[in-house]
Length: 92
Image (tube, rainbow, N blue to C red):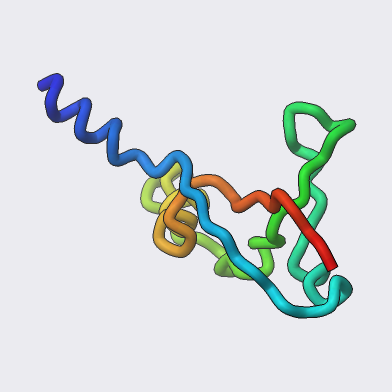
C-alpha cells in the first residue's frame, strides 16, 4: 500500500523547469504576457504567460459538479505541469 502511494506521490507533476528564448520585440511578446495579481503578495505581482488565450473555450465535465473538469488535465497534457508557467526574466 505504501509503495503505491509513494509512487503516485513521486509522479505528481508539481514543478518543471524549462527555458525558452523568444526573439521578438517586447511589444509583440507582451501580447502573450499577463500580470498575475493572484499571488500571495498582491504588492509584488509576477508576470506569466497569458495561457487563457490558449485554453479551450470550455472543458467538458467528468462529473455532475464539473469538479474534475477544471484545467488540471489540460495543463498536464499541454505544459507538463499543473501550474501556469511563470516568467523569471525579460530583457530586450
